[in-house]
Amino acid sequence: MPQLHRAPLADQAAEQLLARIRSGEWPLGGRLPGETTLAPQLGVGRSTVREAIRQLAGRGVLASRQGAGVFVTALDAPDDWESVLRRADIVSVIEARIAIEVEATALAAERRSPAQLRAIRRALDARALETDLEPHVDADIAFHRAVVVASQNAVLLELFDGVTPRSRLAMIDMLRLRGAHGGEADQEAHARIVEAIRAHDGASAASLAREHLGAMKAPLV
Image (cartoon, rainbow, N blue to C red; front, side, top):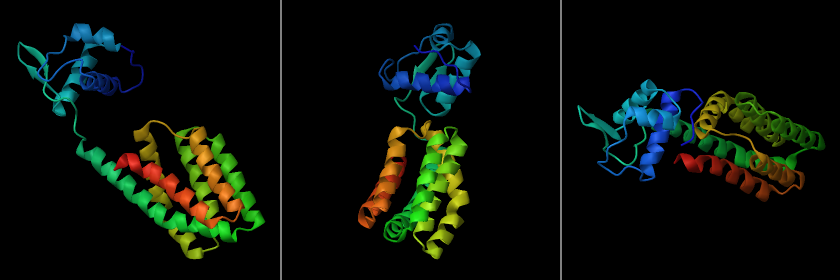
């Protein structure tokens, strides 16, 4: 089994055990190996294994029976309520962004000036350079704001700026849940939006913006 190095170790160990349960390594009602066996397999100490087992017991996956061991009581863990609420909040923000940005992107394709197109391209290039999570989110917001500015609609820009503080927190939370951000495919999706704006193709620009934001929403619902 792969060793676990990232903190918190107990959370990582719990997820590794859950993955093994989901894979069928231990059947429903099956007994897990003892701590002395699991600890070296996971690359953690016995106290970390105990904490991981407590976590999964709290999620209804495992049960400890005095003198008998630890047994599988469910083959998967239901989402905890906090995680459900976090995802629901992120979805609400993405839906607000769809309402604002799809139309703004279409208008930007129709109305953008050469100077505004250059600003959008600079923002796209700057976005690609930011690899740390929070600076990446800030660069992404700057890109999308440049697009909304190019729509030349003051009300849409006011709406975008109004939702930005909450949007920023939601995007950071989403990327932390996802465990990854950026990448060539993501940057290319933004580049296609820029190309549609350059070409004055409002229909394609709106479709691409909706596709991009919809892809962010899909795994959360």
